[in-house]
Length: 544
Image (cartoon, rainbow, N blue to C red; front, side):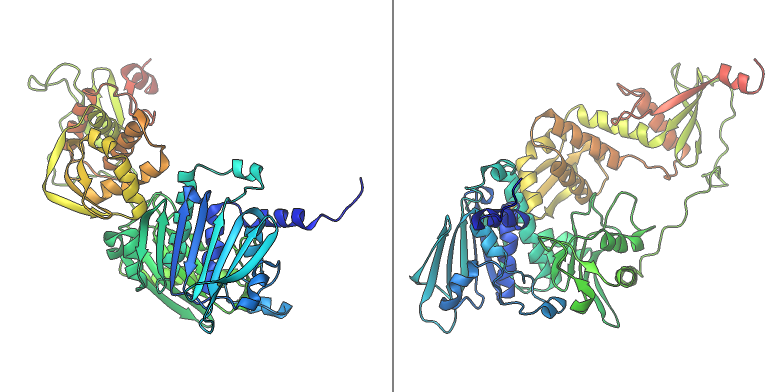
């Protein structure tokens, strides 16, 4: 086969594919350009998930008219000049690839003006043709991107639905809004204003995006050693999420993904945060540019540290210092240790039921083993019950059986992030069918007047945090959503392994389990109990 040099239009589309994957990639690149231009206010708009058009406007320094055509020239940049500059770059962009890559797969319009100019400039790029002319414009730059991937239908087919692409755009804007609290952000999706974040402190910005209740549970992080500086916010051990979606890391202001940093963040929470829960964090890491390589990923989403161990150690030390007032949980009860108080009344002897014992076939609680299993006596022998699985099945059946609201002593108003509020509002019917009395209360707030009776006594905010997590993991609609919500809420409210139970509590759980429609398994399919029969016991003692 003959080797040929690709035509410029083919090469540009290949290069664009490395930088521009989806509408959120366009938003990311344009926000970074705005921040590098010194913008203090950025407005982002998108229609149909960015597939119809995207517009990003800022009040930065703007582009001089004689340099506007260069904005679409590949590898034309104002950030670096020499190879040595790559080792000292502090701007978010530096390759000169963003705008040319966008223009290679979309129709682009740029409207810009500098403070020294009395008249703005408009550039229109479409199918390789560029026209430049005068236009009215405020100081700053506004970039409009239309018909993304119009000339690459294969790429367009691999995009998600407009709703999901809009969610990706929202996540991108949130990432920069959290990292730059001093910059005002405004996001409008399909004509609906979903974010208004005025300039403020990091804690105020977290309150806007995550809700005031979450912000009240955040701790400041501030730590320095030599050339390494770490600051930001982390959550108290009393607050956690089911995934790492609320963890944000910034290296010299650049948002990055890093498993190393996630592990360093979570290590100090060992023994403080329950397993399977993850802390919330906004962590900024500052170090000399020479010690970090930002040119290792096409989208600059990852970096490489020259001293990884030092960064890991620094983040762990910084978070550990912030959590100093929260002691680690002590080791659980030793295996085989009797969990009841010494002065507790002795348990009944293993004997035939007394006349007042109850109806035939009732299980009688004997003891708790390893603070995880209930030992009970039944007609068939010794019953070993998994206390969590049993309680989970009881709660699930009661939730699934139909709404039975338990009014709260007083209505509770809860605040959520814009994303959580949107999901809750869309699926209120599923929550109400389980027994929640909840309705919107303006903005991103909801008022709760009742919770399902099986969940009475559980923290209301914790129940809704769990519901929000489940709504984000399940496609909307149908009985599946209601079932998944009931399963997740029952699991969260059930007694856990390690919870000590009194004889009365164990007996009440056994009675409830025997009344269940399907007592043998939990909602996830795990066994809830098994029987060690008389024949098996006698065989163990060589009596058979």
